[in-house]
Length: 125
Image (cartoon, rainbow, N blue to C red; front, side, top):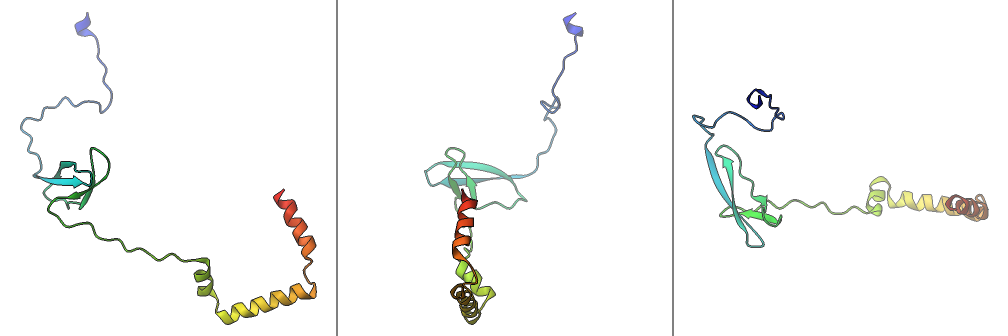
């Protein structure tokens, strides 16, 4: 009875085909070395572009290609501050005009600072 029982398998779990008579794609083995002294090999297709760096299998550090060129240095953009972005939109003369206008409004009492200050405190509470 057990010979006739149906056996289930999971989809994609195993292949029942044999590897006999199959020609694999041509390969090359490339050696990498990490900063912690680990050396390992990675197989690539002959047609594939070999990356100059690879993650170390042992420690996860960056490993560099042995007997190869180092990775290209990435161009780092200089940090743009708020002032830099402001100066892209306005000239110094325009900023002086805006400052003079705002100071004139404050000095004339056009904006009640006490009311503005109280409403800001209520919002934060």
